[in-house]
Amino acid sequence: MILTITMNPSIDVSYPLTEFSLDAVNRVKNVKKTVGGKGLNVTRILKQLDAEVMASGLIGGVLGEEIKERLTQDNILHEFLSIKSETRNCIAILHEGQQTEILESGPIVSTQEASDFLNHLGKLAVKADVICFSGSLPQGLPIDFYQQMIQVCRPKPVMLDCSGEALMTVLKGESKPYLIKPNIQELAELLDQPITTDVKQLKVALSDPLFAGIDWVVVSMGRKGAFAKHSNRFYHVMIPSIKAVNPVGSGDAMLAGLAVAIEKEKSVDVVLKQGNALGILNAQEETTGYIELVNYHTLIKQIQIKEV
Ligand code: ADP
Image (cartoon, rainbow, N blue to C red; front, side, top):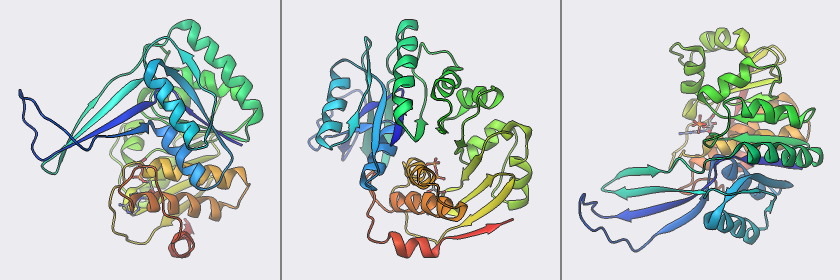
C-alpha cells in the first residue's frame, strides 16, 4: 500500500470571470470546487493507476469533512487526523486569460495535535510499503516536523516533495528520505546558486554532500524531462516534445509514477520512465491530477534514459 500525507490540504475554488472588477461586485456562475493539496493530487493519480492507496494528513472543520466525503465518493481510503482549526480554501480567479490566486495559509496546529499526528502516522506507516509526503507544513508545526515524521515511519521508504526551509532541514538532518523530487528552481534554492539543465552542471550539483545518503534524487525539468541520481549513478531522462495544456500538478503525477514503480521494486529504467510518463500525461490535460492512460505505452517507448 502507498500512504500519501497531505499536511495542509485545501478545497480549491475556481471562479471563471469574463472580466474581473476590483472594488465592485463580481458574480460568478460556473464555480468549480475540487480537493486540493499536492499530496491529494498524488493520491488521485495513484487511484487512476489502480494502486492501493491511503490518504492521510491533518484535516479540520466543515471543509475537512467535505474533503473526506469527496475522497469516500471516489473510493479512496483515508485516515486523516482531525484538528480543531479549519482546513483552508484556495481560490483562483480566472479572468481575461490571467489567474489571480488567493491562498489561505490554513489552520494553526497545536503542540498536542502535532504529537497526536506523529502517533497516528506511526500506526499507518506499519501498513504501508511506500510513504509520500507532499507540500508545505501548516503553521504551528516546527520546521523539522518532516524530519520527525520520517523518524516515526522508519524503516519504510519516504518520498518527500517539499521545498524551502522544510526540505533543507530534512537534508541536514540524520533521518534521510528515500527519494526527493526538487524541480530546477528548488534545486537552485537548495544550493543557493543558479542551475541550468546542463547535464555536467547537474551532475556536479547532485554530487553536493547535501544529497549524501538519499537513495534517489530526481530533478524534474518540465518539458526538458528530468535528471536523476541513484546509488551514485547519474541518469538523464529525455522526453518527447508534446503539446502541454496545463502542467500544474505534473510534479505530483511524476511522484505517483515513481512511487508505484518503487513499490513494485522495478528497475531504474522503469522507475524513471514511469515517473516522467505520468508527469507528461498530466501536462496534456486541463484538469490537475488527472491523466488519460490510453497513450501511456506509446509514450513510455518515446522516453529515453541515458546514464551519464
Ligand atoms: P513540478 O510540477 O514539480 O515543477 P515539473 O513541471 O518539472 O514538476 O514536471 C514534472 C515532470 O512532468 C517533468 O519532469 C516532465 O516529465 C513532465 N512535464 C512537465 N511539464 C511538461 C511539459 N510542458 N512538456 C512535457 N513534459 C512535461
